[in-house]
Amino acid sequence: MEPMGHQDRSSLPKQLMLLSMPIMASNLLQTLYNMADAYFLGKLGKEAISAPSITMNVSNFLIVFGAAFSIAGTTMLSQAYGANRENRARHDFLASQIFLMNSLMSIVVTVAGVLLTKPLLMLMHVPSGITFDYTVQYMTITFLTMPFLFGDFILRGILQGIGDSLTPLYVQGVAVILNVVLDPIFIFGWGPIPAMAVEGAAWATFISRALSSIVSMILLFGGFKGVRVSLRLLKPDKRTLAVMTRIGLPASIGQSVSSLGFAVIQGVVNSFGPAVIAAFGIGNRIQSLFNMPAQGISQGTAVLVGKKLGGRQDEEAAAVARYGMLISGLFISIGMSLVLLFGSHVIRFFVDDPDVVVHGIDMFRFTSFGVICFAIYTVILGAFQGGGMTRPVMIMNIVRLWVIRVPLSYLLPLTFGMGSTGIWVAMLVSNLLVTTWAFILFGKGSWKVTLEA
Image 1 (cartoon, one colour):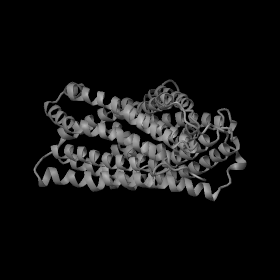
Image 2 (cartoon, one colour):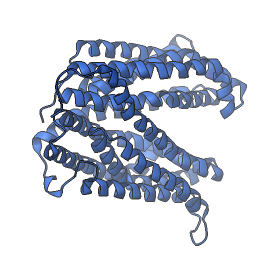
Image 3 (cartoon, helix red, strand yellow):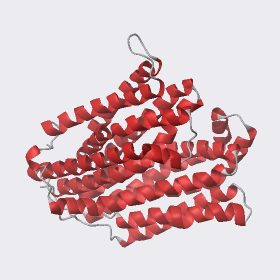
Image 4 (cartoon, helix red, strand yellow):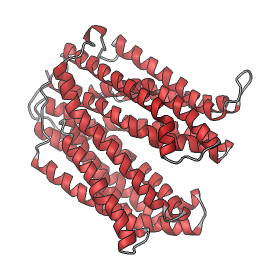
């Protein structure tokens, strides 16, 4: 049993970064995974490259709904591991229940995705003809890969729960390399392999994810990493699954509804024409890249906070979260300072259009501080996740998008005549207000919950 007394807090930042850095790298690899298809399909023209872009928006909506249950499993397992790292029977039981829940969710997402592909594309007004056909091909195969993708989620959820964030990184790294190698072969053809264009990119992803999922299952069912998924433990346990649902369902609803909010805002952006659309797209990608460390630190915070709360070390848990906020704040402040100073050069790297540069600089001027707020907010949510407190997170995410940002994105540009600047102001205000709200909840300490499932 891990000692419950006071520990040297000077080691907490090191523990946090050892957990978080592989997660950051894993997130970066996932970005490269998505970029590989887009890069090679871009050689075939705008119709081909539209397929992964459209598919990503639709699939993310369904994936986040299912993936949140993996987050719930990580919280439960990290707390159990913090309470008693020698209780292998308990860890194996929770790992098996995590596997069961995520397997069920993968089936739901796969079936829903395949059945809804064409109706969703028609609802999104995807142009008929070659663009529509390409996207149907790509999206259908992508949804068939969902059981394999959830296999990766299961591996990450379980191993990160016991503090191993390196193994999932290695597994994903091999999958990304394989995908990059297979993409040009399947898209353009090579030797006996015919050119399959867009469909080839999807099959390359299918094979890569299938391989990584097989490796994940071997590691988990073989018990090679300190925890084992067992067939005899796959019988549903109502109490455990109820706690997992209580944690995972609010998180999934919050993330899914937020995804819809971003789609609505994109519609407002589109009304201002190509230059604003390009500035918004480039600006978001740049800011997301700089925000990637915060995402990794948030996930590391969730795991370490869960471990500390499981070990009844509430003050240690709070200290982990504060260190996470500090480190994340420093990372993002440096990044946003660079964006403010050199943003015009970065935009010109993507597109050398004077109008796009002007709108991009205007966006950075207002959103940079909001991105700093959001990075800190993200780490606070990691602390809440470590305590299984996802309902307030759901509420804050919905309020951030639907109560603040979406209405302001309409009112400020149109009613108050601020033009596209109004959208950037709406982004700043929504991030600032919700971060303040999260700070207040964090200070109250109601998130320091030890689960009893």
